[in-house]
Each structure stands twice: as structure tokens, then as C-alpha cells.
Length: 167
Image (tube, rainbow, N blue to C red):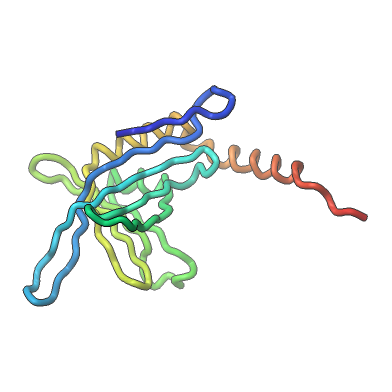
């Protein structure tokens, strides 16, 4: 399901949102070693006001709490055609915080998103076609390559809207 919201002027889009059901994979060491799979609800939001990133909210089925990550739109797009990763400087480049790779399976392609934080690692599998559809829709909001000028324009507007110092 994809939801769109027009901007205030009624021209173009301000944000888009989609929901996808995927699988979260957990390595289980005890009582029986193996990989445990759980369904996960994933909500992705792309906003014109933050053109470089996607807000991705993960919630396991039956759970009321969620975890939100910001993932680069370009990173996800690159991961849909191969493998891509992003390093957080705060982690001192010890590990990749976000890794995205797409794998061809017998029936269809799946994209694996690996998220690492100090509290652990999560691997989430999502149908690639749903992610490709969503990335294509983000182009309706901000075309790839046009993020920089949009951010610069917003920064200038904010700069001139701010009241100056009182002398």
C-alpha cells in the first residue's frame, strides 16, 4: 500500500509512504541452534523536506513498539542492483551500520537489509519488487540528482527567515 500527500500548494508531492511485510532473521544459539524467522511490518516514508533519506520503521507482528532507522535513498537504490553499505563515523568505521544486498531466489528476488547498532544486529528480508516500486515513486517527489539544490534552497530560505541579531 502506498500513500501520497500533495504539497501545500497542491503541485507535486510532499511525501510518500508504503507498507511492506517482510521477514526478520535472528540467529538462535540456544536451546536449539538455528535461524529463527519472524514476520515484520515495514513502513517506509520519503519526504521532500529530507530528500537524501528514507525513514524506515520496523515492527514485528503483534508488537506495539517499533524501531526507526534513516537509510539513504541512494544506498537502498544501489543495494537493489547489487550490494551497498554505509558507515557511521561515530562507530569509527569498525562495522558497517547498514548493508543492503539483493538475492535472486527461485520465485523472485529478495533484498536483505542488515542493520547494526551497539545493541545488536538485525537482518530483514523484503520483496525486491516492492522496494523498487517505492524507490521509483520517490522520483515523483524529488528526482535523483536534484536533492542537493533542494536542500540548498531550503537552507537559504531558513537562513533568510530567521530574525537577525538585535544590536
